[in-house]
Image 1 (cartoon, chains in turn blue, red):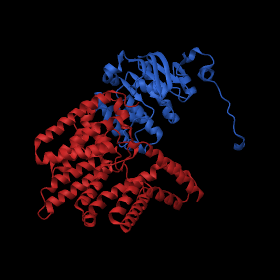
Image 2: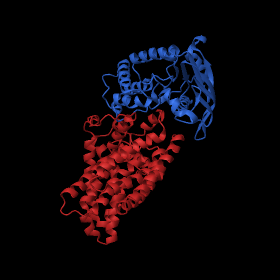
Image 3: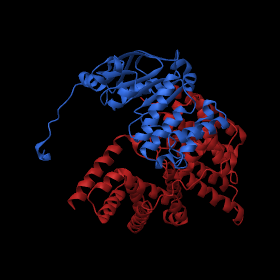
Image 4: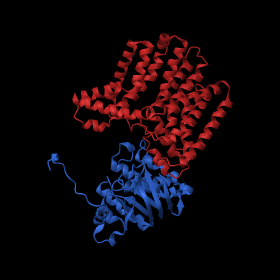
Amino acid sequence: MIECRALMKTYAAQPVLTGVDMVVEPGICAVLGRNGAGKSTLLRILSGLERPDQGSVHICGMAFHAQAVEIKKRLGSVPEDLALFESLTIIENLRAVGPIYGLTKRETESRIDDLLALLDLMQGRHTPARKCSFGMRKKTALAMALLHKPDILLLDEPFEGIDPTSSNIIQTLLRQLSMDGTTILLTSHLLSLVQTVANRVIILHDGGVALDFDPPSIAEGVETAYFNVVGRQDPEVPGWLGL
Amino acid sequence: MARVVALLSLLKKVMLKELNSFSSVRFNNFLLCVLFIMSASVQQRRFREAFWETSLFQLLILTPILITSSIDTLHRLPRQRVTLWPLTDTQRLLLTSVSFVFNPIFVVLFVGYLFWMGFATAFCFVLVGLLIHVATYAAIRLPSLDGRFSRGWLPTLPFKYDGIVRVTVSEITGTLDFWAALLLAASGTAYRLFGRSPDQEAFPMLSILVAIAMSTIAQRMLSLDEGRAVLRYRLLPIGGWKLLVVQDAVFLLLVCIMVLPLSLQAGLAFSFVAIAIGRYPSLKQQKGQRRWRFVGGDPRFGVVQVLLGGLAAIGAARIGLSILAYAFILYLGSVLLGEALWKQSLIS
């Protein structure tokens, strides 16, 4: 379970989060919002990559300042820039982290085989991370997050840049994991996908939680709810573009 | 031509922005070697003789520096963006050449040679520089060699931080600093094995030079792979000091292998100090480091690394293990500092 209380974060005098309160139970929770709304900042704070200026975060009842290592053992994360070891191949990236999470060599190898097959990475497994396509890199980061079967998954835009087949596989996988009791918090801009995969949606706006709902409970759907909160803008196209 | 002028103006803006912050001036301790050699010749007041005596050594040091400078110039503007611009190949080469010649490091070296040896030598330096630049320009258009280097030679270590060892080895061997140090170490070892009555006093100095060549890496241990690995390290369930010690052990082991035939004590003492001084910038300065080039350090920390490290190394070679012990204590202190810094937020 994830619990945030009065979370505040400011960058260069620009408030990004101005008091976020939320409790996320097992299931799939999607965080939506415009670019710069603070979605990635929220995930970075929950991953322990950043400290909030004010407020508290508890993951599985533990606080980062006291039990950072214990929390990280139970956390799987796909950060915004994926955090791969660029010089290592896909399979080397996975092998590098398995033992650090306490997996034996045999367990690591067996899980790596399963994840590579599941995420369609088997063919490119010996390619250095920096040479991989964006989709392959993202799937590698996802595999690294799943390798130790975490209780909590924090995924920053997991579906963006992924081919439709892999996207379907990941959706099925996330549903399965959530049914097994994993807490999944993800950000996305793909509203139709969020509609189908998430069982809870939080919309961040003006630094706080503007709307928190279960998609089935809102008749108009996620997209309409989203635009009702953040507003729609009709662009004024300059005349010289010939439109 | 108007396009090239517009691009040069853009380059000027980018370079001035880079120079805005003192610490953003990329500085490798290897350059200090060149200044050290020059200052030695000035002290002896045998300027011209010293130039010829050290010319081979200068070439050995300057070539990698110029290659790095050239690559940096080529990457100052995003390559894909430049490729999209409507420029001919000749215009691109001209653009990078002018940009290269006005690189701050190149200008400083040019002025140095102008005052040291006169215009003819400085002009030759420009020609050598341009030759290196054109060769670099051509080389980076060849199919990349990345990925053909296997780490299969590295045995799997029976402890859970084997992955971090592999990443660190891969990152360190992906810098030009490592290969320059290896070249120096190999030259020194050849001198020891095959030289006619080699001077025993030279070995600690050679060992120090190898350690200087490696020392800038110590300032960027956590950001050698474009700064991306540090984010992964932050996500892993591992204490900060453990990560630092594993990385340091890899660094020290590589240095030890290189300086073993020269002077182990001197090289090790220098490296303990270099790691200790480099701890703060390594943890606090977020500088992404690209592969296959010299590490861009912070000149303030670089000077302290070379001065204190040099003193410790000379002390260890002349006085003995007690100085090495002091250097080790300084290193242990830096591990404690590193643990404290690690616990703070790395990204502010």
